[in-house]
Image (cartoon, rainbow, N blue to C red; front, side, top):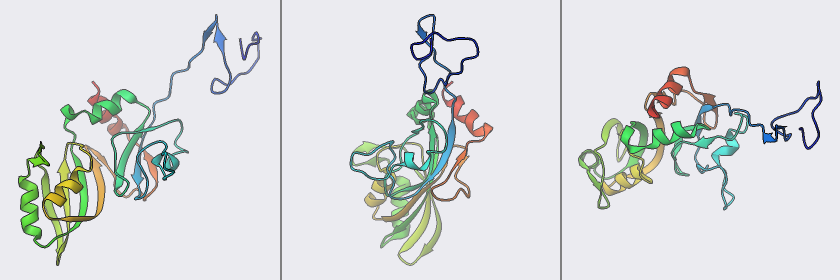
Length: 209
């Protein structure tokens, strides 16, 4: 049956828009799994829709095909690498703390004592009374009371790096995620997306095995 009418030889139907029944059962086609990387700009929330009318990352990937879900989050003021997929098992596995997937961020900060603050960041094992794993912190460049640093963490607590920096006496002026495991942001333009490579997809799927 197609839309309530008995199908005949040669009839065409679109499984995306038509109701197709076979022996009374609704026909479901397998969902094509899609994996992409987005370079999220500032000002976009990491959700599919927002009750407050703010721009969402979903608006940036409408041409990627299908309904894709963000893997993890980047807060509205942060930018950089964001994985989106319709493979729920792989997404949940990647976000699970047991896999301890490294996430690398470039962070631009200001502070009165840059060396001292970096030392505090490296030694930090609690955040607002909650235990955290030590971060790997590298000073890339220092200019006066400002600096570019790189921070690697494998946890995904809410606004974790911003909170860590604040507790260490640093103000974050810009935060960019540039890698998640072997998945790299590279030279992907801001606001654009690309399909994940076979190796990147293999990494994602291995997390769920």
